[in-house]
Image 1 (cartoon, rainbow, N blue to C red):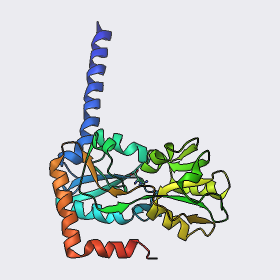
Image 2 (cartoon, helix red, strand yellow):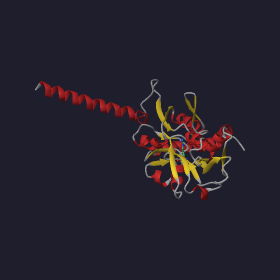
Image 3 (tube, rainbow, N blue to C red):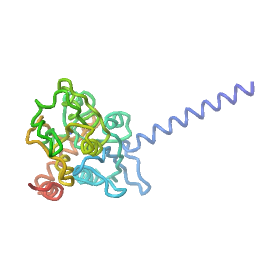
Length: 257
Ligand code: ARG
């Protein structure tokens, strides 16, 4: 009998603990707060995407982080950043571990089934990166049956999967794909233009082909139905454009050709 009672007590405690965990995960969205009573808003990102998000030492910085700071400011909240793999972002959002995704994430019909997007804030495209001494690949038509590196779960990944006979190697970081390209393990890498340009500016062995594979737009993703947050984000984006802050960030984070 005693044994049964202690099992029941243990089980009850486990449930209570599980409940606590869930509360903690929801803290950010419930606006319960940081130690100083300020509410916390959690941005999810994948800091492998300069100049939108990258690491400077321990810190995650970049264009998207600047926008996220403005969003937090608007909400009177403290910004917390969770850095994770790109393909883990939407599941983390759905699980309530993060409040929004700011990760150079392109709006797609597929993603719209699982998240709500803010208005677009940056026009983007997928490009092909090759080694400078490669004269064989001059456009998408030359990628058939080639080995192509992509970042897992990105629109570049999706685009590359459409290429006839190509072998697609998925990386968790675009940079890792560039390294394998440089080491002759890949024929090409498909990546977003701005990060591609960022990597190319620091690596004189690689080149970006002057062809855009797609037309995309980045937006901030929130949990489905979180209209309040979408509205706040759209207001922030509008205000930043009107005040000239947006253009200033573009100046700061994007090198001009
Ligand atoms: N724009 C592409 C997409 O939405 C790639 C984004 C990758 N972002 C990142 N932070 N790693 O799929």
